[in-house]
Amino acid sequence: FIELFRELGLSSATVRTRGITHDQVSNLFWINVGLGAAITLIIAASGPILAWFYHKPELTLVAAGISLTSILNSLGTQHGALINRDMRFATMAVIRVSALLAGFLAALAVALSGGTYWALVASAVVTAVWHSAGNWIASGFRPGRYKKRVGLRSLVRFGATVAGADIVTYIHRNADNVLIGRAWGAGELGLYNKAYSLLMLPVSNLRYPLNRVAFPALSRLQEDPKAFRAYFTKYCALLSFVTMPVVTYLFASSEHVIKLFLGPRWIGASDLFSILALVAFIQAPAGLKSIVQTSLGRGGRLFRLTSITAVAAVASFFIGLPWGARGVAIGYVISTYLILHPTLVYAFHDTPIRPSDFYRSILKPIVASLSMAAALVFIEGRFTGLGDAALLVLMVPAGALIYLGVFALLPKGRQEI
Image 1 (cartoon, helix red, strand yellow):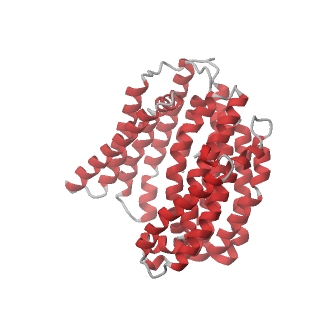
Image 2 (cartoon, one colour):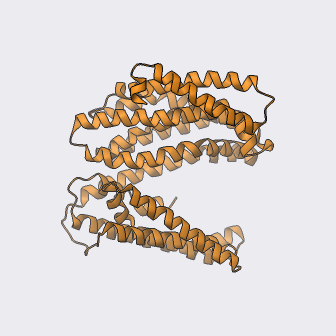
Image 3 (tube, one colour):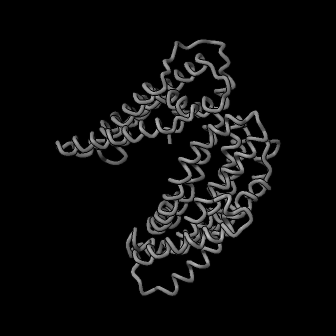
C-alpha cells in the first residue's frame, strides 16, 4: 500500500505533458527519489513492529532488505516514463523481462546456497537494480540538479490526483476481501478471493499491456479532438473484442476451470466465479474512462470519478454482506451496471468522446459474446462425460469459431476483424 505513494503519479505527468522540459523531468526525478528514500526508511523502521506483531524476529532484517526496492525503483521511475512516452515498447519489454530473469537467477543462487527466505529478498532487490539500470541506459536521460521556477506545480498537482485515484481504487478493490474475511471468516474469503483472482488473471494480462500502449498514444492526440475520438473508439472496440470472449468462455466453463486449476475442493468457488464474470465482462472497456481523464490531464475529474465508483462498490459490498460472499458478488454486479451510464456521462462531458461512442464500440463484441455463451452452455451440457481438461479444450475452438462467425456477420464485422 505504501508503495502507491512512491511514484505519486509523476510518471503519468511525464508521459502525458506535451513539451515537458529537461529541468521539469529532473525535478520530478528528485521528487521521486526523495519519496523513495522516505518510504525505504518507513519500511525499514517498521521491521521491529512486524517482528513483534508476527512473533518473527527475522522480519526486522527482512524489512530492512526489502525496503531497498523503494529507493532503487524510484531511481528509474522518470527514465521509464520517458521510454513509455516515446512508445518504445520493445525496449520496455526487454528491460522488464531481463530484470525478472535476473531476479529469478539471484533467488535461485541464494536458495541453492541455503539462503532460505533471503532468496525472495534477493530477487526483489536484484530485479529493482536491473530495471532501474536498464531504464537509465535505454532512456539516455541524465537528471540535472533541482531548480526552482521551472513550472512544476501543475505537474505535481496532476500527479497527486492520479496517486489519489490509485489509492481510492486500491481501497475499493480490497474492501470486499476485508469485509468478507471479517464477517464470514477465512473459508468464504478463500472462495471469493480465489474465484476473483483466477478470473482476472487472463483479463488483466490482456488489458494491462494494451492500456500501456493506449495511454501515451491518446496523450499525443489530446490536441486533435477528431483523431482522439477515432483512436478511442477503435481501441475500445479492440479491447472489448479480445477481453469479452475470454470472460464469456470462463463464465460458460466456470465449474470445469475451477476443478482443473484449483482442484475439486474449491468447487464452491465456481458459483462466485460465474457471478464475478459479469463484472469482468464490462470492466476492461469501462476502465477506459480513467485513461481518457489521465491522457487529457483531468486529474481532478479522475479522482472524483474514481471516488464515485468506489463509494458505489463499497456500498454494494455492505448491502450484500449479510448473504455472504455470494451476496457481495451480486451486489458488485448490480452496482457496476447501475453506475455505468452515469459515470460515462460524467467522464466524457466536455471531451471529444460521447457515451454513444462507447456503446457503439462494444456492441458487436457483446452480441458475438452472448451468442458464444449460449452455444458453449449447450456444448457443456451435451458433453458432460468428458473430463474437465478435454471439455475445456473442445470449447476453445468451438467458442472462437462461433464468436468470430457471428462477429463477421454483423455490419462491418469482417472489416473490423
